[in-house]
Length: 191
Image (tube, rainbow, N blue to C red; front, top):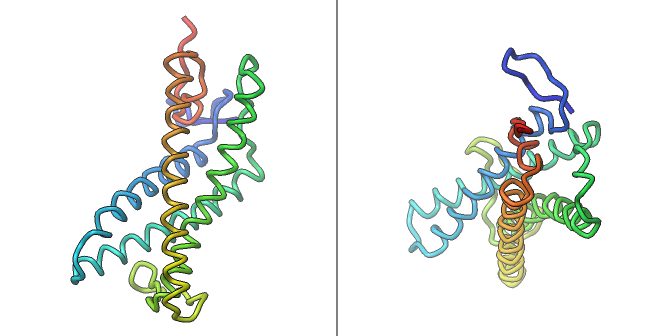
C-alpha cells in the first residue's frame, strides 16, 4: 500500500492509503461525537436546543453512513494491508470479524436512526438543506421499537470501537508491531 512521504510523494510500505487513513479517522471522530452528543441530548428537556442537537446528531449519522459507503467503495479496489505473519490465526479471524462488524454497524446504526426518525414523524433534513425522504410512516409503536434497536446498535458499535482501539494499542505497546502505525501513516523504527 502507499502513503504520502515527507516530500509529498507516494512511498511503498505495508500501510493504508492516505485516503483510507483520512476516511478512517474522520469516521472514528464522527462516531464518537455522535455517541457523546446522543447521550447528552437524550436527557435534555424538550427545547429548541434539544431539537438543534438532534439535527446535528442526525447530520453526523448521515455523514457516517455516507462515509461508510465511501470506505466500502474505496476498500473494494484498495484492499487492507496483510496482518502480521506472526499474528495467531484466532486473532486474525477476530480482527476480520471485528472489521466486518464495524462496517455493518456504520451502516446499520444510522439506518436505524433514519427509520426511527421517520416513524417519529421527524424528517431528516441533511445539513438543514437536503430533505431525506422518510422510509416509514409515523407510527409510535414502531418508533419505540426502532429507538431501542438504535440504542442497542449504538452500544454495540461503541463497544466494538473501544475493543478495536484497545487491540490497536495492544499491538502497538505489547506486540510492538506496525498494526497501529499502518493507520497513522507512520512507520515504527526497527532499531
